[in-house]
Length: 174
Image (cartoon, rainbow, N blue to C red):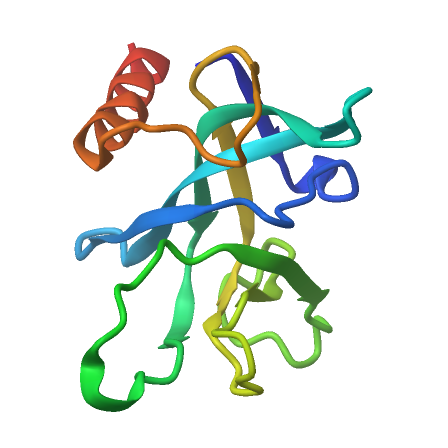
C-alpha cells in the first residue's frame, strides 16, 4: 500500500468522479463486525492541460467502511426494455454526519457516523442512487503511486483490484 487515509483526513479526500468497479460485504460473525469494501480508481488531482483538456493523477484504491450497520443500496433506475449497456457507476459525492452520542445505539465507545455515497444517475433521471449506512469510519487505501492519465479510469481487472487489497491487508498484519 502506497498511502492510507482515514477519518482524520475526511476533508482532504474527494471521491467526486471516482469510478466504482465493485463492492464486497465482509462480515465476521464471531466479533459481530462488518466492513463495506469498494474497489475504485481514486482521482487525486484534475489538471487542466495547455490543450484545455483535463488530465488526472489517479491510482487504483480500495475504500473500506468499518463497523457497518443498517446498509442499504439503491441502484439506478432500470432502463426501459433492458437494452442499454451498463457502465461502471461513478461516485458523485460522499456525505457523512456524526451521530449524536444520545442517539447512538451501536459502537458506544467510539464516534459513529451516518454515511451516504451518492452515485451519478442515468442522464435525465432524478432518482437517488447509492449507498446509505452507519459506521465508525473509513480507510482509503491507494495501492500504487499516482499515475498521470488522460482518462478518469484505469484499465485494471476486478480480480487484480481485489488482490491489491487482500495482499496489502496481509502485509499490514504481518
